[in-house]
Amino acid sequence: DMNAAVTADANVTTLGCESGAIVTCLDWGYSPWNPQTGVSDPNREYVYGSCLQAKRAAYFVGKGDLKSYTLTGTRIVKRDEYGFGRDAEGGIERTDFLEALWSPEGAVCLNPEHRRHPEIPLHPEHGPRIERCEAPSGQLILWRDNGKLATGLPPRH
Image (tube, rainbow, N blue to C red; front, side, top):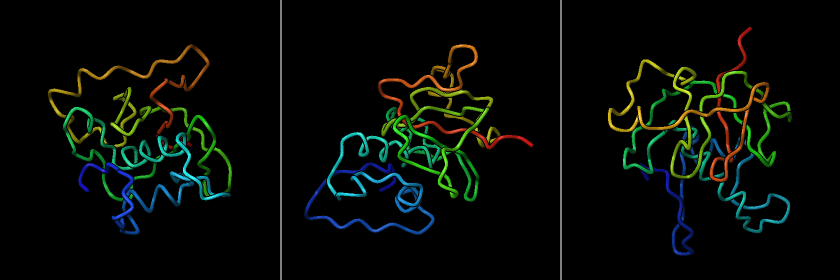
């Protein structure tokens, strides 16, 4: 589906490409079910839906703009409020350059100066109207009621 929306339907089988959002989010540790029990979990469902948009950098899905604002192979770091996802070494990823907080509808807030590909122009109607992801001094992420997954640029060396 071009908007990465997920709907539970017992009559539908979903297939995903290895490099696509579905498989990538599962590999990152974001599944809509509890991996120990296989039981559906509303918090995991929400973060999984958020991951689908974050992986695609689909900032404005909820505003009707289904475009992906990233390129294949772009490295990002991500973490969620609950600690579901982990990096390849099993640790929580960290960024000093917060890009966005995500929901299943796209970006809840965005720091445009930390976009993965600032050379890709934002939708002219939506880009300027999305709020910034401000956090108190010394705090990198301020989670929101609807922003449970954060993405950022890898730390600079």
